Image (cartoon, rainbow, N blue to C red; front, top):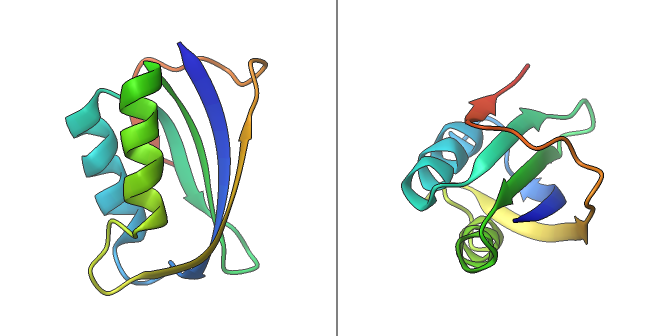
Length: 91
């Protein structure tokens, strides 16, 4: 089980990015959270099998929202991230 923290910048708020991130996570069996940040970024914590997590990261980098755009995606693997059993949009 791998755990990753992501901070995504670009056109990622107001375009369904969080909802479509959750749909992608559910489809791939990824657990975690996604939330908007006050500075316009989106924050994601995710855990899951390494291959599925790699697919998830690639989907996020390409923007799960057709009207979104990812300009920058900071990724860090961190085993101290809380392991979750579902994927949720938080506020």
